[in-house]
Image 1: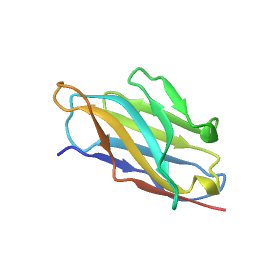
Image 2: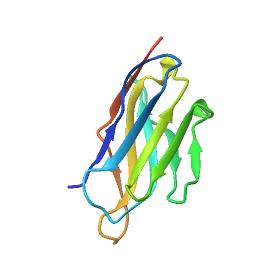
Image 3: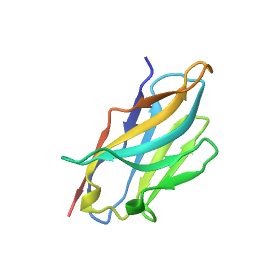
Image 4: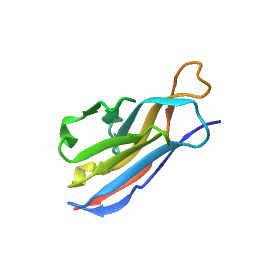
Length: 120
């Protein structure tokens, strides 16, 4: 069973940077759109950024200018570079992607989440 595996979370001081990465745990045919969500304690999961296979990106207003989403289509990996981190960026960050395992269509997959904690 293919899963998305995130890495790169951790504890960082306000103003610092972290880079998250996410990749499938096994071989797939192709990844289409890939996204990062986050969920803070007591809050709903929210979309942070998305990127199409062609590289078009969208960002939530609260991360524009601070976060950058990118991808490697050969490795089917998506990255989230987070700069100028704020206390309110503290959350569990989840990777989500539309994956085609055998070239027969796409299904949505989620990662298990990685904790990002920003100390003030």
